[in-house]
Amino acid sequence: MDDGKTVDMRRIGAMELLGIGGFSCFFGWMLVSYYWLFAEFIQDTPVAERDAIQLFVFAGLALGYLSLHLLAKNSRFDPFRLSALATDAALALLLPIAALFLGLGVDVPSPVLCVVNLCAGLGGASLTVSWLDASSRIRVKSFPRFTSLSLVGGGALFVLAAIVPEAVQPVFCIVYALLSVGLLRFAGERAEGNADAPPAGSCKNTWEFTWEIEPSLVAFGIVFGLTFVYLFNSGQQDVLVGLLFVIPGAGLIAVLALSGKAVGITVMQRVLLCITVLACLSMPFATEAIQLACSCLVVASWAAFVSVNYAFIVKKSVERWDTPVFRQAPARLVFSALGFLVGWGVATGMTMAYGAHSDAFMIVRLCMAFVLVAVVMLFFPSKEHHAPDGGTIGAREPAAPVPSNLSEKELFERRCAAVAELYQLSPRETDILKFLAKGRNAAYIQGKLTISPHTVKSHIYSIYRKLDIHSQQKLMDFVEEFPVED
Image (cartoon, rainbow, N blue to C red; front, side, top):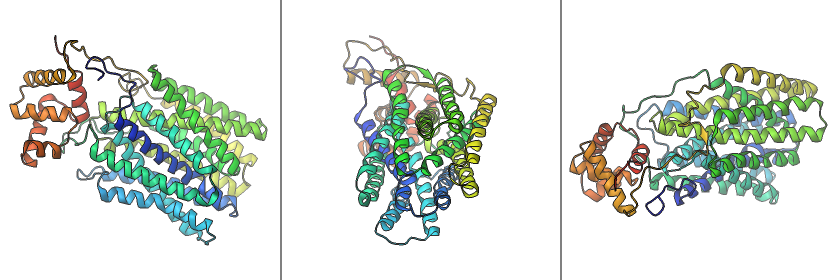
């Protein structure tokens, strides 16, 4: 709210800025850990063996999302508990620590490196889901803006780590991981919105497999995985140049989101499809420099694709599925992760059989480009899944009418009173409604009103039931947009 008159959707609040910083640290850790450190520290290892070791990262990522999907079925599961975050931090630190030992000349056996990479994938999956959930809790006005700016920041942090002396690169990666987990803990404890999940059994519209979405995610993931292996096998310089294109790819989505220009997700994915396929089709017939340029375009498409789809998942979780993001996101994310795993695995097999950058590898990638087109044509997301309520980039929703003669505090009180009168809330429920609309959680309300935890939760459940709302973020938006008269 700006001066109690208008809602500025372009303004980035303090908590959102903190979240972007923390998610950027995660992306910085991911880019350095997944694609750079082992390209730097195990150069003497045969290319095929190095690809096979790195394959375990993406196996861990897919396994992590699948495990989180199963864990989320337990109503007591909470990714923001200190024990869960400590586990995430431990998993994230293993890979840079192993790279640090390699840099010191310690001989780390390949099986150990495989386990370390698997753990890095598991940690990456958990941190991804946790940060996406955190974005729903900190009253982010534009989810595409949040995800894209975070990925731009992660790309910048990757470049910073890649250009420092080799000996301290793992240290940068360790710092990124610790900062990300620390800020995630801070955001989880002090988030203004959606801090309390709805009572068990109150969530509706849970995730179901949809033929319009998942096959496309897998096909895109395979093509992206093949391209990343090409860069990984081309040497450090090409990896650095290729990953630099994460910044303009995600930056395009950030510019659209910041400008407020409404662009449908289906439109954006068609554009990314054209760029990705044309780049793959050009590869077999181009010079080495042009092949690198085409790979860079695919990386940029990947960054834009990630920014858009992460935002889509969060927005739908908040606005349509009425379920905490950490209970919905893993089921969606596992498909693109599986596609990337298949792409990396196919590329590894081709490298073992025919060598890196062989003609056979180029033919496989060319064939996958045609498969991607076919899959998207057959299973492209329908309007139902990418409707305007959750399928646009940069769209700003109109604010509710605001009386010009009221201060922000007076306006808030009047809106809460109007909601309480319309939905017949009791005086105590009205008091609690005001706290919930300000983003306060149950523990805070309990302390302020000096009532038992059971009483607080009972009143919160009653408010949700009367308003037919199933998340605190939706309640906050409902009160903020509730029309009042002069």
